[in-house]
Structure formats: C-alpha cells, structure tokens
Length: 359
Ligand code: ATP
Ligand code: MG
Ligand code: MG
Image 1 (spheres, rainbow, N blue to C red):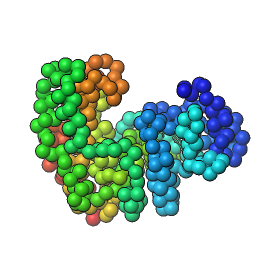
Image 2 (image 1 turned 90 degrees about the vertical axis):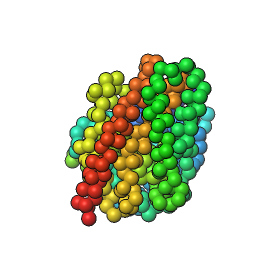
Image 3 (image 1 turned 60 degrees about the horizontal axis):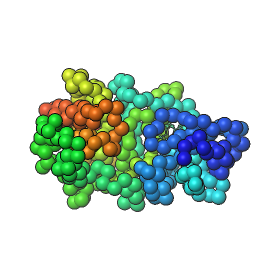
Image 4 (image 1 turned 45 degrees about the horizontal axis):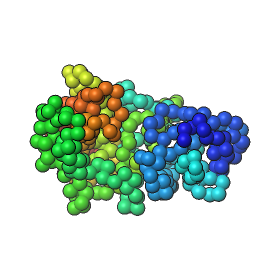
C-alpha cells in the first residue's frame, strides 16, 4: 500500500495529540521509514510509517526506543519523545502498516554531509555524550533488531559465500578487491572476540550515526538530540565511532569513481575524536581507546566487503544506479582502509594526544 492510498489524517488522529489535525505532509529525506509532518491547531508532530520489511519486530524495536529514550530523558538529555496512541500504546498497527508518532523537535538544523571540521567535531560530541549518558544502562536489555549487524567474521563468511556462488560471473573482474578482503581474514574477530570475552564492554550502540540523524540547534549549532533510534542495539562503542570515521573522515563520497580523490583525513579523524572523547571522558576504557583506530578500520573493511559481496551477488541489497556501482563503493572503502593501515600509528598518536588532553 502506498502513502497515497492511506487516510493520513485518520491515522494521525488515532494518536494522543492535543489540538486538531490540520495538515499531514511528507517530511524530511529519510530512506527507511515514511516520515510525515503533522500540523495541529496546537503544534507539530512527526508521524512515521515504520519499515516493517527492514524491521519486522515492531514490538521490540519500539521497546528498545522506549527504554533508551526514558534513560536519556531521566538525565535531562533532549531525545525522541513518543506520543502514544489514544489507547496508550507506543505504536499503532493496522492494515495500512505500523505507525508511531514523536513530538517535533523544534528549532534545529541537520546536515547531510560533513561540511567542516567544526560540524564533525560537534557530531563526535553528540555521540560521545550519547555513550556517556548511556554508560550506566544495561545494554543486554535491548533486542538485536537486526541480528549480526556488525558481526564482521559473519560478514566475511557471507562475502565468501557470495564469492563461491559468483552468481553473475563477476569475480573474474575484481581479483584485487577479492584478495584485499581475503588477505585480512585474521583481523576480523578483534571486536567480536573482545565483546565475547568481556575485554570490550557491551554498550548501547546507535548504528546509524550519519550526520542527518543529529539535530543541531538552529541558533548556536550545538547538538540537541540524536534521532532515528531504530538500529539502537547492544554492541561496542567502536562500531559507532568507527562508522562515523568511515563516512565522515573521507575526502570523497562513498561512490566516488576517481580514487585519486578518496583519502582518509587524519585531521577529520582528530576532530571527531576530540568531540567524542571530550564528551565521553572517563567513561571510555583503556582497551576501547586503544582500539578506536581499529574500529574505524573494521567498519570500513566490513562495509567494503558488504559492497563487494553485493556486487558479486547481483546488487540485491544496496540500491545501484549502474552495474559497477557496488564495486566502485567497495574500492573507495578499500582505499580508505589502506590509508588507515598506513596511518595506524598516527591515528593511535592522535587518540593518545586527545586522551592526554582529557586527563
Ligand atoms: P534514515 O534514512 O536516516 O534511516 P529514517 O527513514 O529512519 O531515516 P528518520 O531519520 O527517523 O527517518 O526521520 C527522517 C527525518 O525526519 C529526519 O532526518 C529529521 O529531519 C526528521 N525528524 C525525525 N524525527 C524528528 C523529530 N522528532 N523532530 C524533528 N524532526 C524529526
Ligand atoms: Mg534518519
Ligand atoms: Mg533510520
């Protein structure tokens, strides 16, 4: 069923809004859920038809969001505020789909791209504060809404399976890229093993740290709230840190064809680390701090092998605009990961320097 067939007014009115609904219209540029702005005689709200294909377990998804936002709010942190249905549920499910409503967080801006170091530092600060505020939260209460999300060894096995099948006969066209991922097999379990043996603490991870999921104050630019909590799950802080570096500390887009433009920026790595560690302070363990560069590398390699696996499988998962699109994406990730390998000592020195500044 498309949005056009649904009486959005009627859906909105089933939530506990104060005023009368005057208008419901598509809003924002999210890719996963269908998002609408609801205007009432009393104010504004966000209505979302949740993507139950990507997240089939709506009950546990909403429970995760409820638990995490309640914990954040109790510490005075601005966060998503669920508007319940008229019968008191956190979401609504009927023939038209699964729906939820949030209070509209007013007077904010967000960015789609890293425009400068200050914005990236602010993003690091937002996620550092998020980790800090949730450091006392028992992450094992949360449900894994997408199983094995950052299980890099499993992602590698999936890659090998796609290679084995070679459904499109594309493997012969990318031997160097295949060799890159095969050649690093021994390092993929560093984080998963650490979580399993307890040397890396299990924490709440956001898992979708892109910039437009941070709402920043329209007046002074400080990070107000982290939104889009669908992928909040138990995991390692290294996942969120690493994925932010993967997309934000790159000098080019994820699908840049000209690899000469694709570089890992140590300066942007420093900016993010300053923001992140500045807010996280003593809540980061020594082992986590030591592994921050590895986290960046791991998320980049993991993403790259997923792109290459999808290229081999015939572009099933990631939307593509041309036949080599996923291969191009895999190559940018390989380039970034290679530069991170070359600059591993420099990254470690940055972390030590930023941590030293904190002590
Ligand atoms: P993504 O593609 O990042 O996964 P999504 O489809 O999951 O996105 P959201 O990020 O939850 O959707 O919301 C889409 C957009 O709607 C946000 O980028 C933001 O601009 C806006 N938005 C969502 N919730 C709120 C809120 N509570 N207050 C104000 N704006 C919001
Ligand atoms: Mg979003
Ligand atoms: Mg989302």
